[in-house]
Image 1 (cartoon, rainbow, N blue to C red):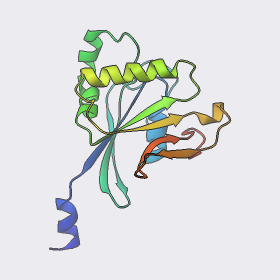
Image 2: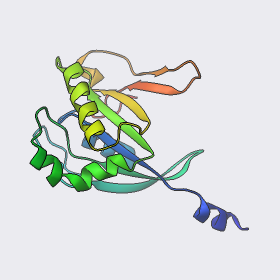
Image 3: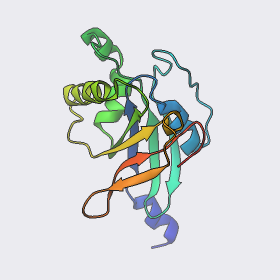
Image 4: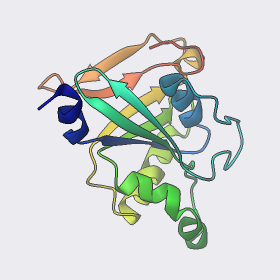
Length: 163
């Protein structure tokens, strides 16, 4: 079998960026995929999922999805309206939970995102937490790992490219 045929047979993983609104999902998406999707400090700047394919060393092809930002008390009708973007999260191989590290309500925001993920059936998808906007905390980039050396939390500034 040729290398090309072997790659074609390889599973393509999907990664969905999820998080509370204004956490920096689209900014991180742009940095990771060399894209220029609309990123603004406003509610629902992302309404539809944006997908990009990228190659990750030792993993292969990955489809990355930028999703709608979550908010507290998201009306059920809005959850239904955002099914396309939320479905990306429930079907992902990995969720990258982008968190505004400088937000004083960050723990409440994390809880809200986790509630929505449970509601859409994505609470069993593996999660990597990304603490974004560390430039507002005057904090250094770092990676926190579990007992097996696997990354659990990444601290970075997507806007400033500090990772």
